[in-house]
Length: 128
Image (cartoon, rainbow, N blue to C red):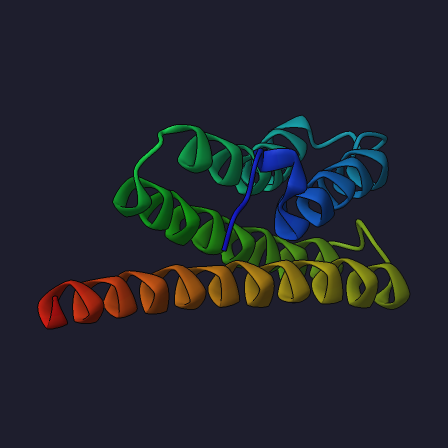
C-alpha cells in the first residue's frame, strides 16, 4: 500500500469532516467543559492519523492509529452523555455515532492492512 500523504488517507478525510460536524453541533452549548473535551477528542482522531503517518515509521504509524481509534471511542462515549443531557437529539446522536463508528472501522482496517504488509514483508525476507 502506497500512501503519499496523510491527506490521501480516507479515514483522515472522514475524521476531518467528523471533527467539523462535532464542532458545529456542540459549539453552541453553554457547557464549555463538555464542548472542549468532545471537540479535542474528535480532533485527536484526525491529528493522530496525520502525526502517525508523518512519523515515517510503520510501527509509529500503527501506534498512532490505535490512539486515533481510541479517540473515536472517547467521542462515542461522550455522545451517550450528550444525548442523556439533551445536548443533541436522537437523530444527531445516531449521525455522529455512525460517523465515529465508520472512522473507527476504517482506521482498524488500515491497521490490519499495515500489519499484514509487515508480516508479508518479513515472510518474503525469510525466504530470500
